[in-house]
Amino acid sequence: MDFSIVIPTWNRSHLLDALLKSLYAERGRYQNGATEVLVVDSSQGSEQENIMASCQKYDAVYLPGDNSVRKKRNKGIETAQYDYILFIDSDVVVEPGILDEYVQAYQNNRHVRLGGVLGYTQFVGEKTFWWKILELTPLINSFSFARDYPFHSWTIGNNVSFKKSVLQEIGMFEINFPFKLGGDDLDMTYRVTKAGYMIGSAPNAVTYHSRETWNNFKAVHDRAKRWGTMERIICNRHPELNKRVIPKNYVLLLLTLLLSALLSGLSGSLLPTLAAGLLIVWNLLWAYVKRVRTKGFCGPFYFYAALCIQGIYEFYRIKQSLREGKLSAFTCGQVFNRYQIRYGLKDDAQRVWTLFASYAVIFAALNVAALFCGRV
Image (cartoon, rainbow, N blue to C red; front, top):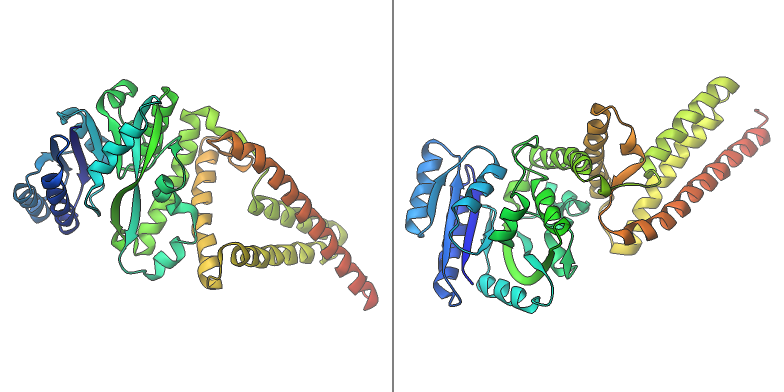
């Protein structure tokens, strides 16, 4: 099996040099076919010079590209001379044997119409303040999909391989999306499954991803912004993914607070608003207790900071929906799997009744306390 390894990059010369060094060693030991490395770069000045020098040192082809990850990946596909294309991000290094693991994964899945294979991404480096928050969010879950599931409806764009003919058949990466990157990998890989192909797993095909590129608020915020916005855009592009679900807790709690404030205004009593406030506090405390019970202890500060990061994602998802003149983001969500719908609705119904019962108990308790104290 012959591999063309496509690496889009910009201003990451020191990280790219480490990646190319690891790939050079891997290509030297790979005996099952030919390989090439295509670095598609939009850097300027000294960064460009350093990247070109690394390409020369480690036998990689340097290709100038537009300042768009999607266009860079498409240029790599168009330039590739081999049958299998492996996409690697520039902030990782590869574990020895990664190419053999991909070969084995393709051979083991000959019984299905296989279009591609996803490898495993492990994060390495210092666990910074921001990383301790991120690992409590679902934003990094998809990097470990290869060890969680045997097949996938969609994948990330790092450490994933596809047959070149499949990529050409589905039209490669969509370039007419907002932002320079983000969401295009989800869209492209989902179109592979829509075309009737399956995407398998190579759990032992490992890349080590540096935490360096996730170590500040801007890096975290920008990812949450891009991915939240792109969820809505992808749901518009693939309407079958936009499933009606019972609103999330924050929607229900906000609605409860607004209705309670209205009731307080009409009745002249603060009890409804106070009950809603206590319900929100109780809900936040219970969310933390449930997290500790199911997944082990984590610092409460990091937990609530993680909720805020997830809130940024939700904010931009809803903002994009409102920009389109739609309210569906409040009642619909991106769902890839029918089992998510089947079991999710049961859990959501129980959640709504629990919130309703909790509010009723808190409201009743406040009224009893007010009557006992002689204040109605």
